[in-house]
Each structure stands twice: as structure tokens, then as C-alpha cells.
Amino acid sequence: MEDRLPVSTGGVTWHAKAGKWRAQVRQRGENHHLGVYTAREDAERAVENFREENPSTRLRKLDSVRRNHVRCYDERTLIAQRAQILDVMESGVKQLLKLTTASGKALRCSKDHAVFTPDGWRKAGELQAGDHVMVAGTAPRPSEALVPPSLRRGIGVWTSMQRKRLIKEQDACYLCSHMFPRDELELDHVVPVAMDLLKALDERNLAPACKNCHDMKSATEQGMGKRGGKIAVAKSDVVLNIEDDGEEMTYDLSVAGPWHNFLADGVVVHNSYNEESGRYRELQPVFYVPGEERKLVQQGRPGKYEFVAGTPEQHKTVGAAMEESYRRSYEAYQEMLAAGVAREVARAVLPVGLFSSMYATCNARSLMHFLSLRTKDERAKVPSFPQREIEMVAERMEQQWAELMPLTHAAFNAHGRVAP
Image (cartoon, rainbow, N blue to C red; front, side, top):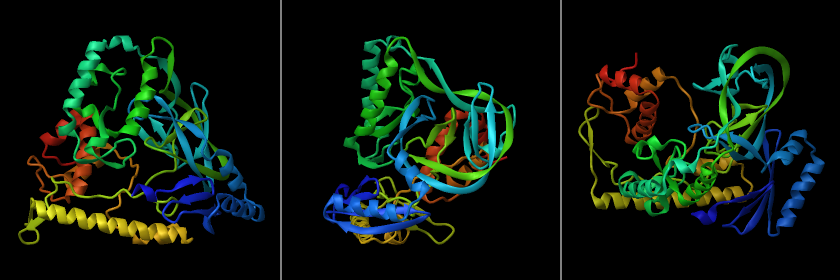
């Protein structure tokens, strides 16, 4: 369905299926659809005329930064990257705080804005003097000479041998979250070999990545292999003072993933992205189709049923029916958008099988409670019967948590997988 994906250029969007340019403007929280045009120049002129007749400070602010880039950070490696600005959203008049750090960084933000800390994301209003936040810093550039060519080749061979086992026939790229067949995916070292050689042969450090994302990430990592110099990283800095700083109109940036953060006045903060909203952006055609490992048949009475594997014919029927339904619903969604229907209305035709992306934070206890409810494990004191799809998400979360907090994870299992 790639031919139905839009290519955005400001207030003008190309709709490949209709073969026309769609002109639209978002102002003061409302979408204004200005029609569809055969010529791009006509669509751009409609947008310009609307903005001249309906001046808005926020629109001028949007035009000045949209498609520009900001510094963001890989939250696993803390290495600086660049992310494209997708939007600027007015968040209303809010009470502001001024946060000052020992290195002289001064951040003004609302109390509910999330700030990156060594322990994860925290609201600015929860921070106190003496807490630590992540700020812009530098570190010595790793040397590729630490990894001999012969060892690097061996790591590459070992990694390629894990592809069939660790990549499903249809799997998601961990960087862009889009689904691809196995042949279009590579196994990527999440923490680069040049950063941590001990993780080079750790399969928990491997994740599927599409070729485009893999090539871009590899190109970024090549610079890390040069001897000498420094690289930009996020570093911990202590908060010296937090004080009220009046009330003002506030704005949030939305930046492209996979890391939804940006550098504001030298401090790493979260962007306004939480869960992908069909009200504010055009949803992409990324849908869920059960793999062969998903058991399809339910047996037994309510409360004591179990799932058993489906037949090849059943899997084929499910896959074909879902794909056809997804195509038809997404075509209807695109047709309504092309006709000027608001995104929040047009999205009603999209099925629950549409993938959504979100960013969430929690503490270890909350995560343990979630895992006790959404995973099925023989060690659990309290049985749980989660739907397989949410269990797949929970398994990925537990895998990451076990790596970050191995002692707490071991205690969780030893005590019957019950949250304290």
C-alpha cells in the first residue's frame, strides 16, 4: 500500500491515489481543508491566500521551524542524533518553572513537561534541588582500532546466523516501527559494537531493522570509529534551583522518532508525542496480521478455555481476509481525506488492527504489576490469561527490564511474579 502514502510539503499534501494536491491548514486547533488541485502551485496559492486572510502568530512560528532539525539523543546509548521537527502545537497558558543546573543550564518549561533524568523520564514539577537531569555534553570518541577487522568479521558472521531465529517472517523495524518481510530486515546491534564490545555477541542487543534505517544508523556509527576527538552525548547534571517563573503561552515540539526527545536550552526534554493521534496526523497503513506462532482456535468453556494452533488453511484465510479489509478501509480513509473530511472523522473507518505508537513511563513496581497481569508464566502464584497480542508487548518490555534491573527481575520471579 506504499502508493497511498502521502508526501507532505508544508500546507500542501500529495495524494498519490487521487493524483492531486490537497491544500489544508491547521489554525487555532482546527483543520481548514481548502480543496484539491491538479497543479501544486494552485494548492500552494490557496494556502498562502488563507494565511494572508487569517493571520496567526502560531502559523508563522510553524513555518519558521517545520522541516528543520533539532538535536535529540538515543536513549539507550545517550549518543546525540538529529531529528526532524514535525509540528509545533499550542499548549495553552501554563504556570512555568525555571530549572537551573550546576553547569549553568537554565530551562523554562511547564510543570507537566517531561525531563530526561538518569532514572528515566520525570515531570519537571516533580524535580527538586539535588536531583539530576540529562544535559548536552561530550565524550571521547571510541576508536575502531579496539575491534580488530578479523573479530569484526566474525561478529558479522555470528550476527547473520541469528537472522532466521530472531527475525520473524513478518516483523517490525525497531527504529521506524513499520512491518517488513524477513528478507527486507537486518539484525542490528542496538548498542553499537564500537561502544560496547561486550554486547557484540549478546542476542538481547540484537533487533530487526529495515534496510533504510539500518543503513542510516550504520552511517552514523561509522563516525564513531575514527580515532581521537569527541562525540556529543547526554550527561548527568545536578539541579541547583527550581523556582516559579510566571505564566505564559506554551508550545510543544513534535519530532520524528524513534527517540522522541529534543535539546531545549541544553537540557534533554520530551516532545509532545505520547500516543500517535489520528486527530493531528495522517495515520500510516501499518496493520497487524497474526503470524504462524499465533494460536487461532479457542477451545473450552468461558473461564477455562485455551487456544490451540490453527491449520495452514485457517492462517491463510485470516491473513487474506485481514489484508483485504485493511486495504479497503485505508482506501476509504484516504478518499475522505482527499475530499476534505477532518482526520478525526475519517479515522473512524480504520480497524483495530492498525498499529499505534506510544511512549509511556512507569516505575519498577508498576511494571511488575503489569507483567503479572499480561504474561503467562509457570512461576506465577496468580494465574493470568492475557490476550496474546498484549502478551507479546509485555514480553518485549520484560526483556528490556530484565537487562536494566537483573536483581529486581530475579526477585520478581523468585516471589511468584507478584508486585510488592
